View (cartoon, helix red, strand yellow):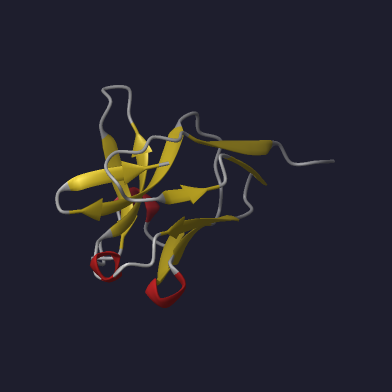
Length: 118
């Protein structure tokens, strides 16, 4: 029997002059894993900017799940990872042990207090 699929909806939104893009829709099996790759402009300012993966709440706030500062939410500890490769202008997040959850997730790049979502 097949495991149900978990849809991950990526909502594009861009503020400022930073380019950040990636897949808009991903699916994975419950209990399985999925990796999402994000691409950004290769400029010196982006090398040290915080990259993150967050979940959009009903109140419009995107709560960080994991970021390049070393933060990992307690609810996702042991189930997510994030790797930034600034020389290639990319970072990717992996989510493991997927559960059925409704919601939207965003990858982001924080640049001079501006947020850039996709």
